[in-house]
Image 1 (cartoon, rainbow, N blue to C red):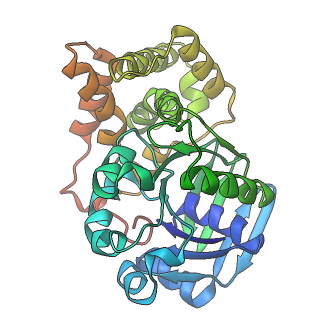
Image 2: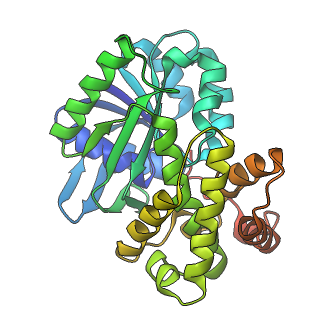
Length: 327
């Protein structure tokens, strides 16, 4: 397959390495020192079950649009931060709309696919999520990743009864990803899966960034564990307000799942420590918008988000975005 990965940070570069080693053609879009390192030294990825150190094809967005046509690719994978989705789409829109290539979001939150659909049409959008993976840039050109690194994906907003071009592509991607060592499954209701992941993300990501604690510490703490559960309950309430049914049993399952993980430093905690923009609006904001629209109270999410936003000072030089790690 010919694939483009936009946002070649920790998670995107890990998946790229797996696919390249399996002989797929992959182009990575990145910027800054991370891009320069990949162009001059190649990409190095370290994982508990996998290692990769090789030359890769890496470009910035300007070179991407000059050197490639969108329909040269079978699919485009977005693995960039949700905070960057709008700006990247603003840049790529003329190029993307000149083709018909499907776009797959593997990002946090539940608002990326609706935005892509608005710009490209539902028939070109595949919803997705990366689960049980932690990936970070150790230094430009060098990635460390942990976990099974599973992918769940499906037609947006849900699978059609009649097979179509996206159905065929999903089966090709599913077979290719699994053969490359990326455990992948196709979901018939991708919105349900995205909200289930948001239950975990809203449960631990903002609170982790606020407290500086990893997921194991939060979910085993006598006080913070109750707050985590409360945040998850509020996320399920927001999902129900958005037309996705999540029960208390689903919340219990998600809580036990994150509680059983090894200690993970959440992406939002890493972003705060490295002075990058936080995905607060994409995670907590998505919950609060749905609850407010229905007149529902989400006090845990409201408080944690407000405290984190109050502490976060974007005008402080210590909080400026690190260009090599976020496209």
